[in-house]
Image (tube, helix red, strand yellow):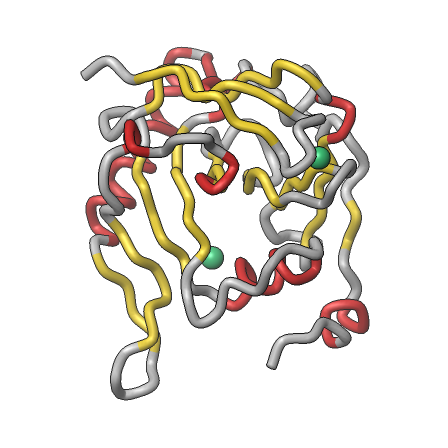
Length: 191
Ligand SMILES: [Zn+2]
Ligand SMILES: [Zn+2]
């Protein structure tokens, strides 16, 4: 199925871009209830999503085109090995999550940054959902992982993993990564 080209922007419209060919056939819409996604929103000065989820569209980085304000991309991480969370330096808006290396070709895009997300189809997976017994579990995860793996492997085979706005040709992030210290994280207002 051919996807749609969807415009996105940070809160203040400085960092703008297009999800190219986006749709249910080229990515998976996911809700994530995990502690890190929530902490990332609060760290970035965005509204606390709890008890709700962070809304994501998981796809390949070559579908992300930055049209303006690429110099505002600012990655942070909660650990040395943890994924990179990319916010817009201008207004703090959380935008993307990527692996540490472009070779693992995936990105989770914050769908709140789209003017209209209908073209992405329905949410097909829910991660770290709190169950009635207090534990956390996943719904629709098998399909999510299958799509993730198929897209990442496809991008490796085709070479399209190299087409990414997040890393330079040497595989380094395009902006310096801020490692959030334990103290910084512990100081976040997370009731
Ligand atoms: Zn902004
Ligand atoms: Zn999460």
